[in-house]
Length: 256
Image: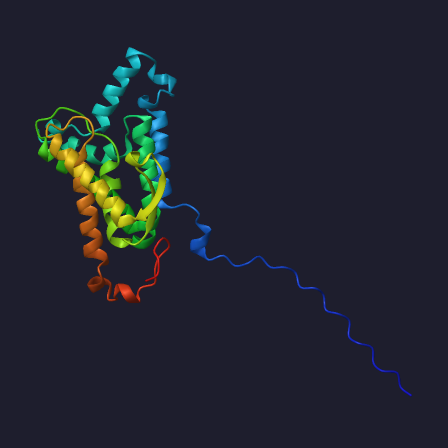
């Protein structure tokens, strides 16, 4: 009687392999994050933050702030006086902020609405859109106040453009908002309600403030309108060849 053959030795346990990560997934940064980080870094290093000892304190710091804003910000009177270098200031002004509140407010809006807008547009198109919209918004404000000698700084024109584009691209998205007249309760509303309410406030403020000091509400209105029109022209169904009903919802949108 022949003994049964011995079973084959168990195969070596397979060595665990590192899961394949798509190239796009390895990139954890975004243009929106880079823009926020750049604005924050330039503000901290600049004289308005009060954190850079190179600018001194007291009157010396105030003089440094005035000179800094005059160099990198938009002065409408200089823009229309025929100085070629002044036409670069609507671009540099996008990365200069006048106070911590100014910076943090813009950073919050850009973080909330910029990520999804960037994902829909694509990085390159979003970057060009952000810079061009902000540039034109500041030039539009300068055109309306051509004789003004006040300095205009901040990324509000670009961010308003992002809000306008977001309104067209994600009207069904729901965002959490705080309204003072509702005791600052965090409530979720459709994006179109929040953004149209915000736009109405900017429009009314711009009409009540024709001289242009303080917040440049008109730049917000121009940026918002440009952003919405660009998103409509670039991403409307007739352009991409599909209908909204056949397009899968993006993060933040609810399926119909």
